[in-house]
Length: 132
Figure 1 (cartoon, one colour):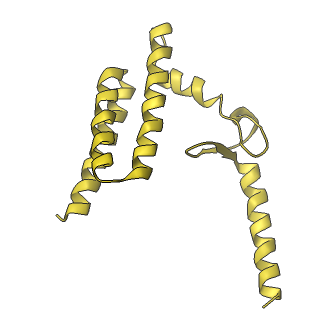
Figure 2: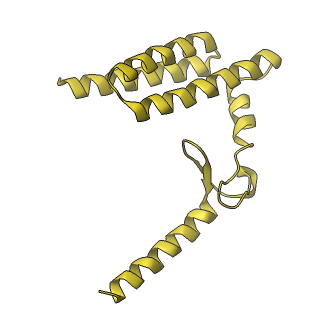
């Protein structure tokens, strides 16, 4: 196995362990796993991966606080509760108002806005082809 493959396997395995810990509401363990991944990614100058891991850390801390305040909630209930707060960064609709919400690092986009974006892209491509 080459070094890149080993690193990818380590990262995948760590994220899988984090998810399992999160599912079982072992938030302290999940945070330790993320901390180890963050330190490793920083050593390897993987800035984008560090950024994503820091977002996961924020999510884990938020879920931990919710679980502390609501001990009867399962992780699935917490995820559902949190996902209902997602708002499309383009049109402002909530997850409940649309068929699909796609989350990114700093925002979300709904399926309706993706459709509009696809129409704009197709139109621009057609314009570009005509101008050649």
